[in-house]
Length: 326
Length: 267
Ligand SMILES: Cc1cc2nc3c(=O)[nH]c(=O)nc-3n(C[C@H](O)[C@H](O)[C@H](O)COP(=O)(O)OP(=O)(O)OC[C@H]3O[C@@H](n4cnc5c(N)ncnc54)[C@H](O)[C@@H]3O)c2cc1C
Ligand SMILES: Nc1ncnc2c1ncn2[C@@H]1O[C@H](COP(=O)(O)O)[C@@H](O)[C@H]1O
Image (cartoon, each protein chain N blue to C red):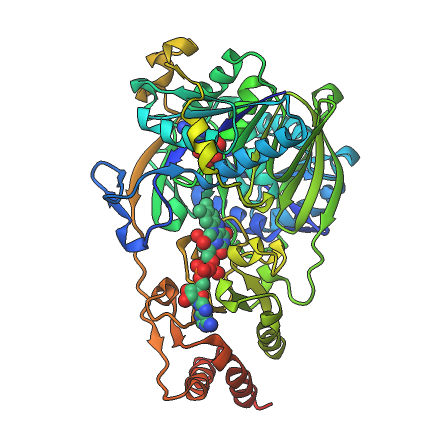
């Protein structure tokens, strides 16, 4: 079946990744009555096909192979080439994820077509996909179009409204046979280390408290941890903090870190460089605590305190407890 | 081992957002007056990665390759001062307004012409457009593997072993040379050139190649051959008004914030 749009889905911990639901939402909106295909590549991913259909896929193209249990550029590229041929879609969307940012460019160059990375807005104009992406560290937005097919783009997490799941939706599941050519597999993944996240997952948290270089050292994060504990919040950090090894890289928020969109984002001693706010500008409410009244972070914040954080955190923790009736 | 590090010259990213300007009509970024262009941040980290490999293998040759205007010599010089051996400047009027496919075409053609190069190091993304595709593109056009977004790069007996940064952790990946690697800031701070090294760098050789030297012409590098077009470029506007908490003491400010958050039903 030829499709209007192909969404390259991802499965994490046995479930469809949120970015896949977001892309299916976007694809339904953009397809203008055309059909939407969804690729699922991995091991055991057949089980998730119905979920993708419920979220808007008309056909799920499954490459289910034990050899594809973990991402590897070379094996996934082979699977993608087969899926792409079968889907014959003029547009293919990937998530801006570990997989998408490695595989989408590789596929585009293999097919001799263009790719637009890390897009946040998608529209069809004059029959072509017009994708808006932040550039210059978040200072600017560019609208790009690919003039060759397939038009490939990666989509930033949380930038699109996910489709509502409808369990009664009908669709087709097609197994795509791929015989992995081991001679073309030149990279070997020998080890994978996860960063064991404690408490609330950063990407899913409703409240995030992030600390910047102004915190002054790893021990000084104890007040951030204390407030996070009171609010049930996840902890984030600026790149400066992660580069200094005060906090793990997995907590980095921003352009080259994680994208979060909590209801409340509290930035403590963070200057608010565009590359940082690129990761939190989707937050419904940003609160800034910074001793510099001219700090850039206040430009994107709804509430602010101009003060040395050392002096406000303890009283803030007490006042928050009181407001919450604790 | 011959390592080519791709270093792009970009506008300084460390400027106040208020001095970031765009000409929407021509869709170009207007560089701030009096601020010199710099090597792209991740590319200097690429030079550091190459120098660490050379620290372990003094026979390794490190070439710094930059495509851009004549002025891109400055970023080559800076990288040579970090200890690299030679420079390679790709400059030609035809290189002025390329899309990413064309960039990878030029860079990969130069790697081919360099003949003995067996490791290409790029930044994870150039910090002007933040696209992050050229490393994979060069690899694809050379038919080499690419190992992207790395924080550690080792070579022993012709085998490359890297640690790739993932959203939640990292993975170790191996491949035989030749290969392309792209690096991220987690690799560590780039070394700072010493005065004596800066003086030595002035004497190091910088080869200049044009499109014709690489066997490329306007049919491949012209505007018509672009696969990606720029339809619009603008500066996003934020409409958020920040309410700064009043108070004579830090305690009062903290209490007012907690109150405001409770009233907005945020806590
Ligand atoms: C290509 C590229 C990608 C990048 N990606 C990211 C990214 O993903 N995430 C990211 O965060 N950054 C990223 N950066 C880096 C970014 O540009 C900034 O350098 C970084 O965010 C600065 O971190 P910071 O605000 O913690 O530190 P600083 O800029 O040093 O700011 C510290 C702040 O703390 C305040 N302060 C100091 N002491 C106190 C105190 N006692 N009380 C209250 N306030 C205090 C200061 O007024 C200042 O505003 C990237 C940069 C580039 C070029
Ligand atoms: N004009 C250029 N000269 C040298 N290297 C480049 C150039 N453009 C891109 N690169 C390399 O490719 C990487 C990724 O660039 P990009 O795909 O544009 O984000 C950069 O970090 C550089 O290492």
